[in-house]
Image (tube, rainbow, N blue to C red; front, side, top):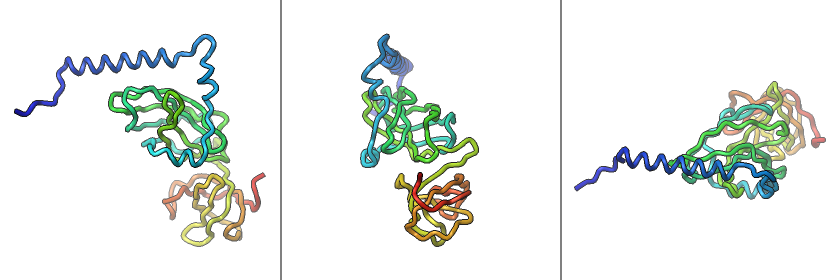
Length: 223
């Protein structure tokens, strides 16, 4: 006899009650104490190396938008997380640390959706990512690159020109990210150090990389 896998209303109610109890217990756990959680405060900013980021295998599946100025609301959505588990959300850059900016409880399918705000300290000259920590600040998932810009969409990237020929000149940023460059460029040899000022292009001849529509490019190291 084949048994039906459809849950009865009573079973669904029991699972929903378990989820609500988990949410209530997490709310209590995350509530600040009168003296503050010294451990959480000490660990709210985490320094993570580039190798440490590379070791994180899970990814945040959706990030909208993918660029914006400080104060921009960004919605993160993903699955594949531990079910009914409190998580911390951070943002930061390699070698500059990640800081907690939100908390969320996954549902019974290990999913979450959360809107967070890009903090005022985020810099337009650094590549940022959102990171998902467990409650003990162990990193478990990472977003794709988020580009912090000025209010008008301008950003800066310093690095070396990896190539200068068609179809696109390519900048290897100090963040090790490759950027295609579009627009009028001065004569700069491949390997030369430059600082690029520009805006994220909506379309590109090299869609495999983020493309910067160049406003200004300056030879030399970043000041």
